[in-house]
Length: 290
Image (cartoon, rainbow, N blue to C red; front, side, top):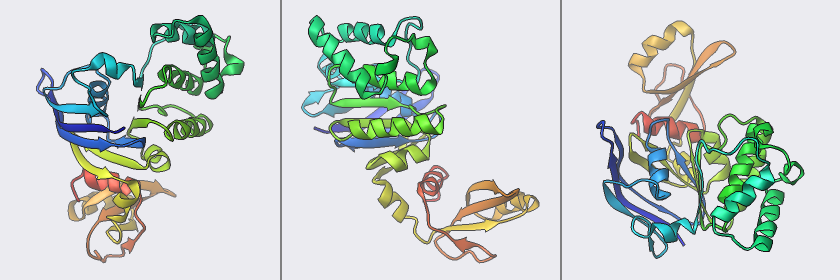
């Protein structure tokens, strides 16, 4: 099964063009949708999740028409939005049981087995009787994945899932998503480059509603070989350098700016060629250097 998106466009009433002729083919496995805030990622996720209509275009999941067969698609869909609401004083066990009932798991014995298995899988069994209001950010996200996995979905959408998590919780979340992605289509929408590099076998970069790249992270990085150059400069030099070179990023290292520029040829002036990474790909595409 694969997800096919063809010519999808969406313009909101205020004139913002959230999606601009988006076409993607997403196979089974982890797929990263990378873009800055406001790029159109959430609009695309909500449209795939049957929560809003596009102005034009088509989406198919296997043989299903996502835009016309919404009820059938929702049976195969798991969705973890960026912000999901729960009843804070309800325990994880009771809340997941309630959500399982809403998902259509009406037989009590089946529902009990499903809920217990999912809480074990996301490593929340020991906290099953704890109120959700007492959960850490990482525990809430793992609970969110548990509810998204109700009904054994074939398509799982997670929108900005690791924002605000500490490194330990983030790693646990990575491992859980990687395990899930072995058997289903998982779309990971994020602005965090590391999430995509560490988890995804395929990816797309989107900005201002347009797809700027689609393919594997390895191919994306290889396309910049010998085209990324680095130099440490003084703070005073930075403004002038921005007018001369196509700077794709700069960061402070030991109190000094270190800039990366895009150039197909040796720019001289003390720049040194460096091995590109996915962050270089992201910024070079966003700023239109490639």
